[in-house]
Amino acid sequence: MLIRKPPDIKSSEITPERYYFNRRELLRSAGFVGAGALLSGATGAADEGPAGHRRLGKVERWPASLKTTPNTFEEVTTYNNFYEFGTGKADPAEASGRFRPKPWKVQIDGETEAPGSYDYDTIVKAHTLEERIYRLRCVEAWSMVVPWVGIPLASVLKRYKPTSKARYVAFETVVRPEEMPGQRSGVLDWPYVEGLTIAEAMHPLTLLVVGVYGVELPAQNGAPLRLMVPWKYGFKSIKSIVRISFTEKRPPTTWSLSGPNEYGFYANVNPNVDHPRWSQATERRVSSGLGSLLAARQDTLMFNGYADQVASLYTGLDLVKNF
Ligand SMILES: Nc1nc2c(c(=O)[nH]1)N[C@H]1C(S)=C(S)[C@@H](COP(=O)(O)O)O[C@H]1N2
Ligand SMILES: [Mo]
Image 1 (cartoon, rainbow, N blue to C red):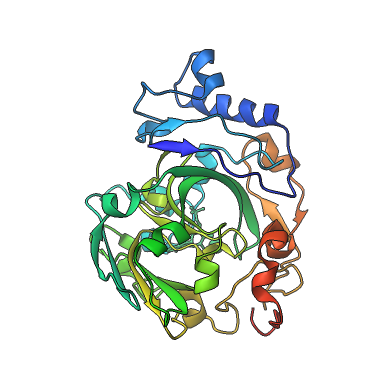
Image 2 (image 1 turned 90 degrees about the horizontal axis):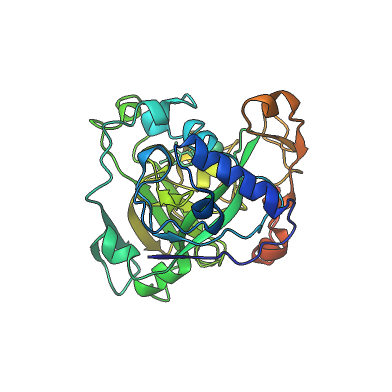
């Protein structure tokens, strides 16, 4: 499969050199050598990427679509929220060894002309994979920049023919307590569920993610299929999806069930609407080594910096009431 260049993303922050430096460092730390391959980024021969994860296909040069240095593969895969594996940031990487993302099926149902149980390949292989470097802002006020690989969700959803009654899209995470130790606790109600309006789900920025840094998604990042909605708090980007339902009514969502006065359905990143227990005006960019000592907090941007692309989805909506 070919991984296509991402479209340029506005309101950016770094240089291509810095980005390549980062990628080179990453590959070196993962035991890769050979400057030629690194510079071209085309590694057709090698099937294994960082930490032994399977490469998704030919990786084209990554244009500097964001001016910010992406977080390292190490950071992206060891600092996670995935309560099915535990509530600590290191738990998802450490406690997901038993998780088997293959084979994988997704139930597609509700307001669709093509309901059914479809396997991963049927859903994914019809599409060209794209790399998208997105900011990720967690509601806990930390953030990262991540090079995801995926498919615009709209392209997938359209193939499954939603009916005219479909006003929302609901998503559900797999339930496998034998493989997911966090599910043996009652910290949240399982399955983890999420939802978007049909307009949000069809927005060109909304990605169905299958990989990161050019390799298949590691378990801790939501293997084998997860959502990435970059203008919303991270909890909307549900992992390890096994069900997608088109619905007429707004579906329940895990965090708003768990704390209705703290987490709303929309969960758009908004520096002007504080969480009842902390400010959302600034964020801490996750970093390791020396960077973590030097890192200052930075301002959180409206819609996480994607206002130009998504603000029109919310015209006339009170963003304080609809948090
Ligand atoms: N099923 C499920 N999806 C989930 C979560 C979770 O606990 N369970 N955590 C969410 C939160 S709070 C965040 S910030 C992102 C983190 O994604 P990452 O670990 O790939 O950075 O995943 C989201 N998706
Ligand atoms: Mo989060």
